[in-house]
Image 1: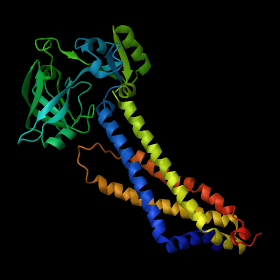
Image 2 (image 1 turned 90 degrees about the vertical axis):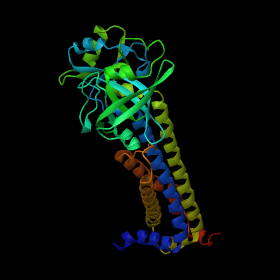
Image 3 (image 1 turned 90 degrees about the horizontal axis):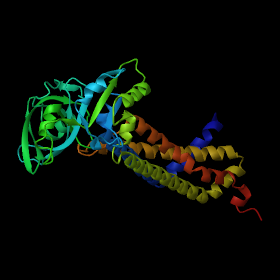
Length: 389
């Protein structure tokens, strides 16, 4: 038992005697932890802001106009095609989705808020469930459901009247709508969202001069929910066979096709990987210098009978302890800083991603210190003490 605790005792004794030096490297590891966790949270926040509405849809397939490359904004489908989709075997429900951007005019001279204006059919696929208030009423009702991000930034609540400003032709127009419900987490295209009945959406959305006098409501895509027994691949093939000039995508395919989404996530993942690599090099360099500075001490330990296993365990336990302290300090600092962020900053701490990042940070300590451990166990006692010729 004493032999088992000897390596840990030696590592603690050295850390206490040189606590300033080891505290400094722990703080460096804490800063690396802070950076890794914030990059992971930023990636999750930006990705979530892009995909949140689509990821929470009560649908399994999305019907696009052909040759639109699964880009919702590039697709145009007439609303009368929704009935054709609903008649396909295996389809439980289908609903149109129209997307646009608008400006939410806030009272009291506050800065206007850019929002995603989404048109959905009340009671159909695409309408988000509310956590407060009620669902949308008739197709032509002047009502909206707010994403909770809009509510946080605008301080609007159920029962309030809001004003949106859009450009139609060459004129700016204001429309007044009543807030009837609040939905949880429904951002679209990195914008907080407001949902309006589809016919109302077509009336108030931004329009070109040619569209101002148009009478046919045109959706971007059609959202499809399947029956419980339906096979996704089979229904997809039936939709392609029975409808002309359409493409059909699953929800994951639609998310991957969002403009800039894949490139954005790849960039942030690469930054996180390079940060971990820097951590490995920093920790490895520090403990290699430590090993070089204590060659005589290791030589004495070996000369009095300590085994290579004891020396290796002492080095590894020291590396793991320093890394754990640094990661703990970094995680605590990250949590405290996150409490001060306003809702406008797209930072989302996902439990699974954060846990993986912490485990990776704990692993880079022993990984970075492997070279110093190998060097320590290969030290010859006589050479270390200067007694070898």
